[in-house]
Image 1: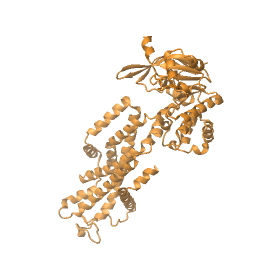
Image 2: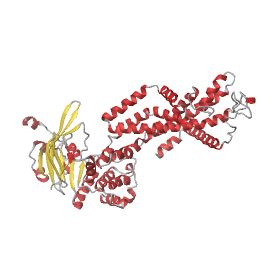
Image 3: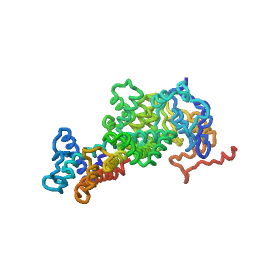
Image 4: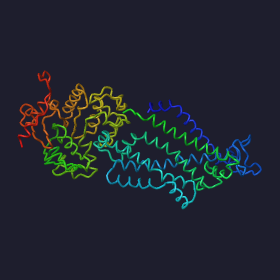
Length: 281
Length: 279
């Protein structure tokens, strides 16, 4: 573990990414608190001012204003809370389902494995974005529904990975020794195998965060996402696309935020994978 | 009552290439305090027999084709899964061949031994003291400190000692050692065998030792069962079998063991000529 940490922190890109993620997080948490207490950040994200609409970046509105005169920076800061919440909670949902399905499938094998894996195959054949769209069309565009639906359709990859890990680890000598000691199935799965499969599971978890952020941005862009006036990175771009030729700042800055945040998570995930790759036997 | 009885035990494996009879009509019996060696080459069915005692074989592909296993008078094949789990570790404990991989790499020795004690002896309050006691009993120096180590911090011999301590700390009625010294070098092998011998006299423990090496059973096991192709071909007192083996396969196995001061240029291999003659 110490070796993995050391190798991880020798990776310059990884450190930059971690700093970026920490920065996004602080902003998102700060914005969440401001929103709860109804404080400006630095202006109120939903306050309109038609006298100052569609202004390019300037001294008061650092990243310009939109067609209703709302401050783009404030709206982006408010949106970061949504994007990161979606990323994390959706990851947690998909990780939870993926780990349980994968562990049961991999450890028990036989017909259980067959049934669960065919279910995974079937889900993977479905274009998940359209599944999400139709679920939201039926259930309504509420942020928690969006998060749950994203989580519910994205666990298949994790399940396959966990299953593969379990297939190898269940044949290991120490699992046989644990069975010979009379340990229960549940204890063998969660106490003996799971900790040994931790590294790859952790890496997929980190990498699935930006996936969820991107899906949420895509949904918001198609105006199936979180309903206005609540700002998200996706719907700022959606609102701005009408003025794309006159007000480039409405698209470029939230686009950059999505791009940088996703890239930072991917890079951290990748660095973790490389750091954990040759683990001591 | 006998501690363990096998009556005409037969075990088959259904594989893609047809049915394999791994164990055929094996009958054995052991009393409390007995020690038995099961000797045979790879694939002779000795490990399958040992694993079947607590139904550790994966079914399928394995299946019990006939016969009975009685442990302390109870029919193992008819036990519920709870009874079987209580018997594993508590009734019959195992030591496997590879100590390095039989210990879970992410936990300390202490937490792995503690698990077994909590499972099979829930009345023990001072678990740490119990662990120290057993680690000391198997010859680990400074057990209170060593028990906080992870498996990779121990040498192969110490890992195998820790495995033995883990098995013994559950106070099993019978210890099954499946090639416990094969992965260790010769000097450590001798130490572990001496340790097993000492523990046997100290605790009057019943032991089944599985090996392909006739050289290591002398002085450790009272009786020997020689297995070949799933059958017991010879069974009797260790001393008399070593002195006067009857079956040609037993003779061949004994002849394979190199001795100090051997004048032979080449190591002996098993000659299966007798098999053709027997047909």
